[in-house]
View 1 (spheres, one colour):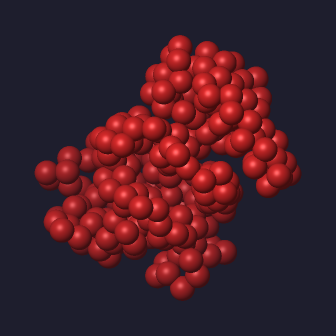
View 2 (cartoon, rainbow, N blue to C red; view 1 turned 90 degrees about the vertical axis):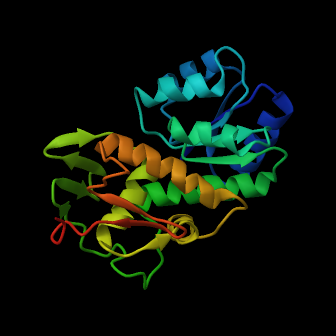
Length: 242
């Protein structure tokens, strides 16, 4: 099945360059050059993934992401020319799945697109041999008040649906499969994406913040996800929780 990618940037040269590389890789590509055009193309073509520039006009990438997240959990890779890590984290905190800084290699972008879509299609990209990695058994995971369904890719707390992005779902599912095990940020990036990108491990914090907010889990008195200072995170074993 041909996968559809929407590429949005106000620089036409970048759009055409990315479009060419993605089409060569076998994707069907739609394009837009501003925020309104992006929203129209998103609703018209229902893409499987969006490559979205942070600084597009009318409205900008941040506002566009907020609007899309009201309607869909389609994966979003955000392009940014900004060097500040905080600017990149803003995109992740409002629902982007990944980011790549300009200038970038078109081949690297294609690899990112492929990795995100592969993870979405397969549920999670944890390598073989990982403790409790996905197998043929994809029954719902039940952990106290949480139910994580790998087939429907849905999370419920006390029967109520919890809205998560694709990446956030995979991150939570990995932790729930391994209760009590401590994962470093770098381990989480490697297990979910198969390879690492410079500076990316810090973005795990942004995704974790969103997961906690969605679960209504207080990081100071966590019921589900505990921060292990100086290391990373672990999911609290619900059977042994006080």
